[in-house]
Amino acid sequence: MVVYAEERSCITQFELGELFHKGDPKSRDFDEAFKWYKTAAEKGSRQAQHRLGMMYARGQGVTQNYPRSYAWCKVAAFQHSRRAKRKLKCIESKMSWEQIRRGNWLAQDFYDRFVAPYSR
Image 1: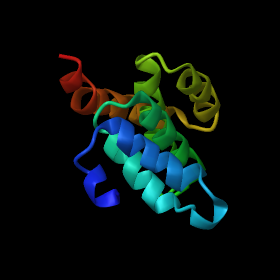
Image 2: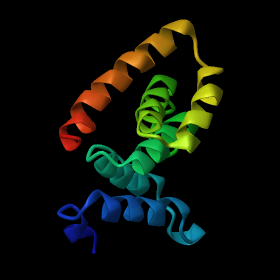
Image 3: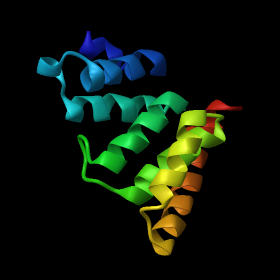
């Protein structure tokens, strides 16, 4: 199933991320969840972008990184994700001014690369 998922839609990839992230505790694999969320996020999935942001915030499957967390949540929020909008304030409260500036720069970069091409 995983072999063919790379050729599937971002919905399938997001669902694989969910399976590895929130599935049976014995089969949880944050590294695999991160991989599939990232693949779906880069295809424009706002749900995957939000989950990816939260994994960066918590350091699940990746080193904790608030600017990247903020950026991914901001991109999802721009696409009308209410959950991501709520999480942005919490993440921002843990960041320095410089980290917020970096997060905003990353959000613009991510939007330009991973959302704008799919909205044309």
